[in-house]
Amino acid sequence: MDMFALWLLIAVAVGLGWVIGHHQRLAFSEEHSGSSDSGGEHPLALSYLFEAFDSPTVDSFVEQLEITERSAPLYLAIANYYRKQGDLERSTLIHQKLLGESIIQDKLASQVTFELSQDYMAAGLYDRAESVLTGLLKDDDWHERSLLGLLEIYERERDWLVAREKALTLGSRKNKRINRRAAQYCCELAEAELRRSKRTNARDLAKEALSIDKTCARASLLLARVEVETSNYQAALNVLKQIEHQDASYVVESLDLAQECCTQLDQREKFRRILDYVWERQPSSKVLIKSAEVIAQLESTREATEYLQSKLDEFPSLAGLKVLIELLIPVADPEPKRWIRVVKGVMENILHQEPTYRCENCGFAGHTLHWQCPSCRQWAAVKPLLWT
Image (cartoon, rainbow, N blue to C red; front, side):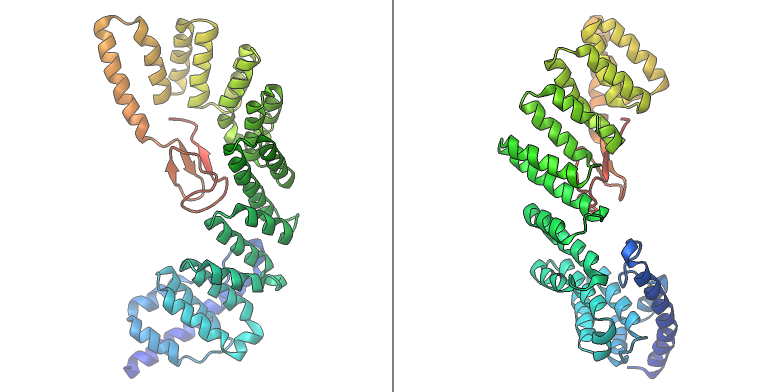
């Protein structure tokens, strides 16, 4: 290795070591708040090191760098940089090397062990990651992060039963992060029971989810579905009222169930009042369209058309305009009717390309409500878009 490059690397390392060490101490102190990843993030300056020197040079430097309490943060930052670049072999080797040193075993063993579990996770070696994280559970400082890591493994494997059991037995009932996940696991199990038409089991699981996390709107939607499928329509309406206070962004998801309940109870006027109530608090394309449909049923197509025209002036909506066109087709003359149908087809193509749901955390968008975002894997972050 060129001596000039070696000395330059050492000079860079001294500066980086201090900066990263300071960063790591701050990260470790913030660990329990979940605001930082102790050992996962690296200063922007670290990327300059990899841009300035090729991989063999950095590897040689890492091999010759003495492992001390002060140099350990630099080792961790380099390993995590490798992992973020997809070089899991180098990252794993560095963490394993650190664990072989007595200074690490005395003071930083848990932190390095946790980082090693993240290498295994990134490589898809879930059995190894699970074994490492299970061993860390007895460390009070790393218990919560290790449990969250274990839950992530079970989520990826879609083992909801084990995930629920671990969350409930190893998590603190005061920990909202764990409780919210546990409630979602109950909902996953409830949906599976519903698919098998085991409604009693689904009801019990949905109620369990609400007992764990009373803000779980998904559990209320599931419980209402069970009540509808068992013809308990008034009970379903009572459950749906909770969603406004749990997470108002999911109220629009409750409208189909509410409409079915009111129809079965022969209370269509009540559903219209529900729509008016929701519109006052959260105007949306779906409420606009359903209101027009109800007005057409209870009054006339003309009244529904006038309603849509008045609302679209203030709240422009392609979906609302498409419904307006559909209402106009039956009363239009033959020639205009042909062109109206052409316009309707064009609008349907445009609407088909527009997403109806978006993740508030990462921006993932689509036409399906995913309770766990497929991109960032956050729970209950995918919300309905109010206007299309």
